[in-house]
Image 1: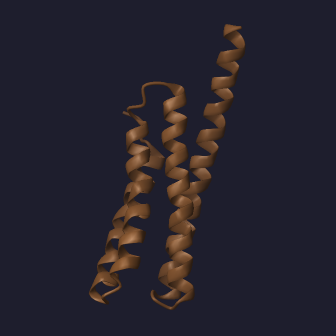
Image 2: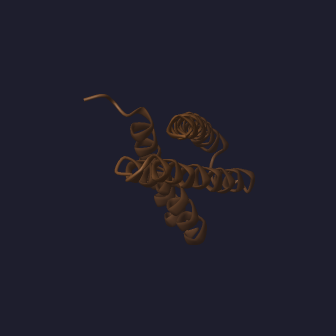
Length: 124
């Protein structure tokens, strides 16, 4: 079976987010921890859900949601870094991984839209 790189990367990223959120909860930063936990794990959950899409449009839609969640996660990570709530090095590593996932998602979405457009053109 072929490896699904984005699925693996977003799952690993979600695991790292869970660890950061545990630390935040220990520091009593419950609101920020919950916000980051929701958006950071949602990226991988939506990627996983996209694997069972009922159509190409549904696939693109689910990955677009994952990309939006990635953008929200970027916001929370920058906020946590700039407010000195988490270590700068830790935040930078997570931001880098999140940005890499976002780039991959963007490329998959773009490629899928092109394929969908070609298919639509062929049907006409």
